[in-house]
Image (cartoon, rainbow, N blue to C red; front, side, top):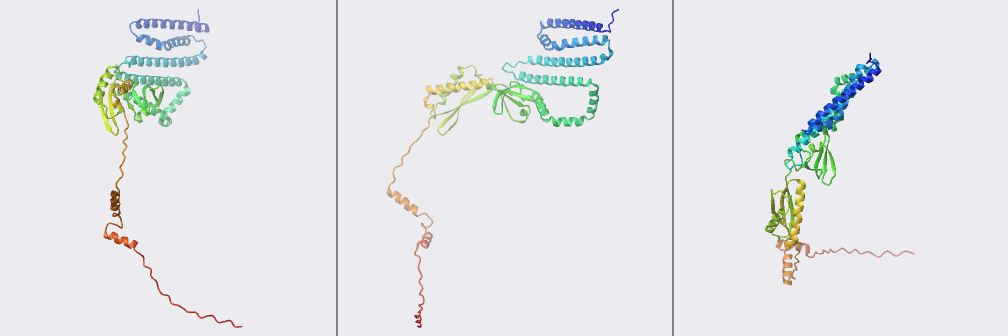
Length: 402
């Protein structure tokens, strides 16, 4: 009689288990292929979850065979622990793939390559964040489950649960900025402040939201640069969202022209220009004189387009066509700077004298009697007072005696 609990029996049992697992995998694959002929999602599911599912089936079958036929009891505990860790890791891998498949299936239902894609962009953003959150949660649970399979870690986990309050405070202080970005990312996804493919002005740069993660946002700038901003930037700093409610926009073209320009002729030319292009959506076209001071007249043209890039191209097109028309058809509208030179004639001498006399009568010491008296006090002659001095006679000194 064949002994199953032997090394030979173990090998045979493992081989049979693996073959049985492969048969089950082939049968399930056949069913999925049949379903994929009618719908698309079974094929996407098979391509995404094929490898972790097959590995999980083989591991479970091999584990069962080893547990039933292992001849050496000393090896049983170690092998069981190894298989348990492998099964938990593979199951986590499969769960992450299933979450990604479910999120991708939802994202495929909302296309962003259509004109009115506001709802689609919102769902794309939220589903992408849900997928990342689900994958992170599965990874954390898988890692924690593997750690709990070790007896020492179980005791450590009990003590950590007892001091969870202190641990949470320390962890919160240590990862304050990271957690703030994580919560900001969740807030951005579900508050609908920004969505994937939104046109924004951030840090003075024009670009599109290319990716929203748990901690940062990638902005694809118009010149193909990528600007990576923390999620907290969009929750704490004002920014412009050009596609918040719709992608349709209104733009302006301003021209400083000469006073002799004809706004009526410019309106007619604007209508002709817009009929020659397909990027104008036909919603609005306005030409107004918004300012007329100094030496120029400011003409503003307003046009509309379906989105920001199209509007930029339309504004450039209208500006170029208007410049071409002004140069060829209405040269009087070209801005000019005028300088007028004025030559003053010489004034007669009599007028100069009268003005000088009039000027002389205005002052502190002229014009009134009080001023004249004040002037006399400062300009009259100063009297010189002389006093007689007494004359003192002095006798000659006595002659020297011999």
